Structures are given as C-alpha cells and as structure tokens.
Image (cartoon, rainbow, N blue to C red; front, side, top):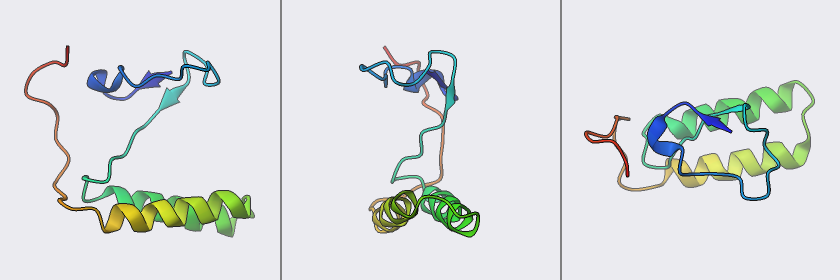
Length: 82
C-alpha cells in the first residue's frame, strides 16, 4: 500500500489484503481536522446508500477522534523516520 507520507510507510498490511500500489491515507486522532473528514465521509456514505455498518463505525471513530486530546494542526516530521 502506498501512503501519502513516507514516514507512514512503516504501517503495513501484514495479511496482504491491500494491494501494494493502492493509495491509502491515514488520519490520526491528534489531527484537529481529522474527525471532520471522517464525519464527512460517514455522512456522504450514508447519503449515497452506503453500508450502515461502515457508516456507524465511521461515526463512532469520528466521535472518538473529536474527543482525543491533545489535538494539533497537522505537520510533517522534522527528521526522516528510521
């Protein structure tokens, strides 16, 4: 799987269910904007007839992210990960 950030390449799919060249995007609870993105995803999925279980899970995760502390503006690491 291909992450948008090089420092997230250490996060992998050990079962190989995600194709190696499939783009993925990771949002963390500490990102002050992340919960809104996940909430919007859930609302969009619901409005388009998406799987109710996916919608429920996304809304629950959005709520957990919204209440995560501390939160900060997203940034890039100052040094490459090892």
